[in-house]
Length: 217
Image (cartoon, rainbow, N blue to C red):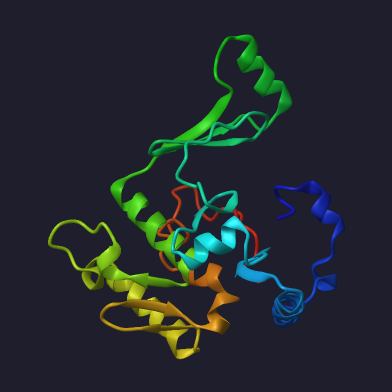
């Protein structure tokens, strides 16, 4: 994302490996680290079988937040420093990105928060869905806190249509009870989770914005 990180302008896009090569590299990492005794937790995380992360995943207790996989992701987090992101209750907030602005707010006895958001019930539900898929590589519909009297198939009707294309590619399996990600699908779990992110394709009144997240492949 060179529009956010200026030093990345030094990297030529044509010099980067292709998506297929990147997937081959990840598969090689999983193979080599697996042979060395590590467990593939997901995405870019590996752990020894007796590590807390590996045990939590086996026991269905693994969690995830914007910092990565965790056994205590539900805890409140207060960020210190420039650009730090806090998670308190049902809110997210980000500190000022500039050192000048950060200290100016502190000098005025103000919290150095630049922006924030209060999560809606829909945000919380979608966070739970994405988190379970990324942590368990599976999702049981009856384990979700859906609105009373609302079925998963109706609430996420558009998402199920989009997931069918991924199922056709062998990345996951779906039935009336839930979703199970295949071994191949685990390499692309971000793409599967992104289906449930309603903000990604949301139009902006000011027009198209630069991409705000890194490539999945």
